[in-house]
Amino acid sequence: MLGRTTLKRHAILVDRMAAQAGIDLQEAAMRGRITIAEIEDAVLRCTGCAQPCACESMLDRMDLPAGQVPDFCRNSEVFSELRK
Image 1: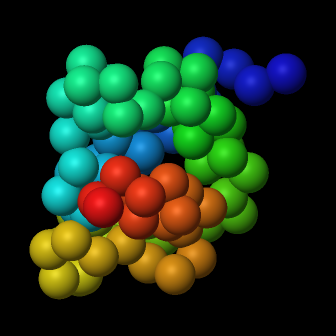
Image 2: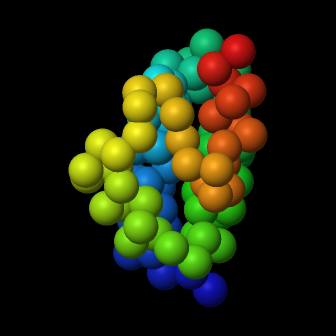
């Protein structure tokens, strides 16, 4: 079972990666473009990533151009759909 700390860490990563992609998840949810359950699923997918430290470091350094997420991101398809 995943602990609260792990879930919180990955929820923050999902939110930060969405912002990197140019997406405000809260706004998208309020507009009905994504459900809370889909955001929860995105967080759970993120917990399966073997390199969360790499994501944190990359986001801290802002290594990607605005609007892009790394190819290895487990939620890249979700973010791509929300950008449409």
